[in-house]
Length: 465
Ligand code: FCB
Image: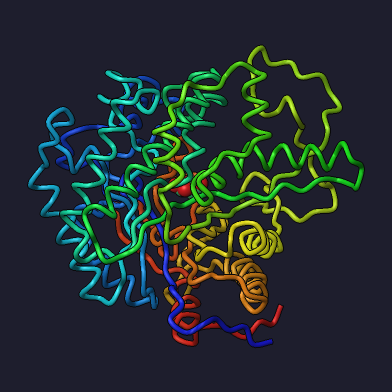
């Protein structure tokens, strides 16, 4: 079967600044360096984000490697703590400006369109420790100012911007489930940080319009669909709640400018709603975005609670519980996570039917493997990640079907380009088109790189699965 995509489709990969650049010459460490200093044992094999892919020095080589595998676009993010030298006065770091300018130019020289994010989980440590990060309105203002500086400096060449990557994840990790700094478990703060992040996003969108750049601005959300076990109303309701908390909480305000009333009612009843003003609500309502990035990895399986909720603080799991669908398929290389390509089709339908068919791209799809399963370099000079290729194809089949039925999708980015550092998992899971040698930082192409070159060249592939 021939699987094709619309003309001008974006093909490429994504990473983030902190996961790839390395901390070289950075004026302000983020909460990740801070947390590592405090609790290195929380990080897989105790690997920090100090060197990672060394993109800070190797961006020219990397831009060439992108072109070699047919990438016509690439998303990364600016590190707030790198660009802004003084977070009180907003004085920029000239070395950082030079670096990002050179990096952007190197990409453009290779015909790779840069898509730049402003925030990828990397709160500057000093803003977290002084103000509580997005717990405070000061940091909301600082973020808007930083955004404006980025648009003024790079908006002439960068035509697609994303304010936040997966904004719900720092809330989950930092304020509910203890996998990001500041490791609090506090629903009131979780909701406050969510709200302030949405406000910061809205202010950045307004700043973009004010600067008058000619490109587009959006946000990258992880829209994990919720599936349940049967048609029983209580189980369907559980899926509805999971969707409300984990998808619609950010999707509705950021795309439609409004908060879902059911969510507001629940949070009010739980006494965790923050104080808001009419002016803030207008700022959010009027911050229209041009496009959305959607990240998808694994589905969410939920049903009505069969056990008593036993945490002593509020979390969304009061309204459902997770379960494992025995008949599903699983990825043995990623903690047996479920594989469900049709979720891509379901996400596309949801955007089409409920979110005005806003323009979007698949900003992250990634198939995790560990380095042992990927194996050594083969006789043909490549690393054999055929497992990854087969799964990527299956997901793309679903996307292509959705597009043929009217989904407004303009591209696909793999997570990731070169194996990069992944938060507390450091390098446990590999996702790249290129392997990273952690000793030498050498890049080694995988079969998926060759596959991607053909995919991009043909704007599609022959599916034999
Ligand atoms: C996503 C994040 C990204 C990366 C992948 C594996 O949730 O956006 O930074 O860590 O997971």
